Image (cartoon, rainbow, N blue to C red; front, top):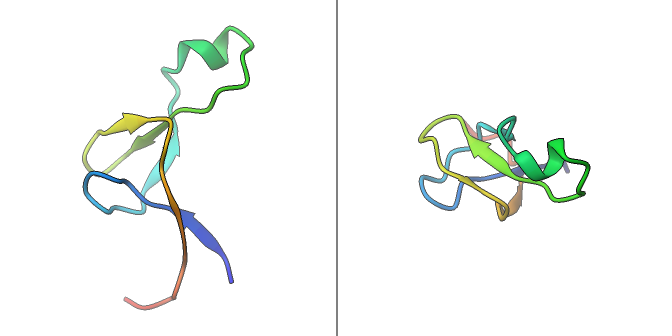
Length: 54
């Protein structure tokens, strides 16, 4: 089953890699994510199994 990242703040599944992450732009291998639903940004977004339920 496929996994998706979820926002730890709002529980939203619309999570993208944060384009404003300056460390990644400088060549470091840290990942930062951005919730497109609430705007929360951070390096830890847990993954859950996508159930397919609506």
